[in-house]
Each structure stands twice: as structure tokens, then as C-alpha cells.
Length: 124
Image 1 (cartoon, rainbow, N blue to C red):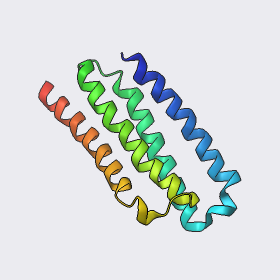
Image 2: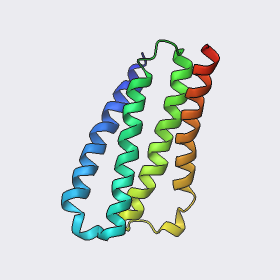
Image 3: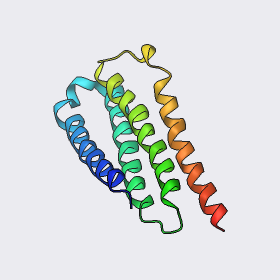
Image 4: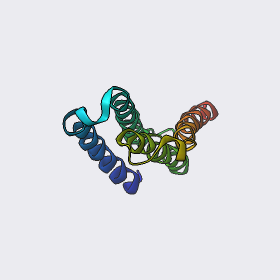
């Protein structure tokens, strides 16, 4: 197992909990309905991919190189997709200035899942 990915996934999980709590409590009134919905989407996808990072490391069918590539795509996806939604939701950055980052992060997440499917298919 890749210790760096496991440590990073654990830290990303802690950040997801912190940001989830921040949105639910401290920012709830400041974000508004749409901002809160975006924030919750960011936290949800953030968490899903943290769990995926941890689980992927347990698959004995995958070689470590394959696990690393999938993990890299998921990590970039978390940073771009969820990260941009966090920034947009709080108003720190206007959506029109980073409009391309959110879908690019989504594509990274999709690429990670497709890669996972490909490697499992290849293993037979």
C-alpha cells in the first residue's frame, strides 16, 4: 500500500469533516440556499472520493502503479471539483473566473472511475 496516499486520504477526510461542519454551522446563514447546496455537493463528492481512495488501496487485484494513477485522478478531482465549489459558494472567487475548474475536476473523477473499470476488466 502507498503510505503517502493513505496519509493524504486521511487528511482529506479530516478536511471534509471540518468543511462539512463549517458549512452546516458557521456558514449556514451566510451562504444562502444556493451556496449551501453547492457547499453540500462539494462535501459529498469530497467524501465519496476520500472513501474511494482508501478502498482502492485495499484491492489486491490492482498493481500499485495502477492504484497511484487512479488515486492521482481522484485527488485532483477533489481539489478542482470540490475546491472550486467551496470557493464559489463562499464568494471568495466569482464563478465566471474559474468556471472551467469545476467540470475539469468532475472529468478527473470520471477518469479515475473509468481507469478503475479498465484495470478490473483487464485483470479478467
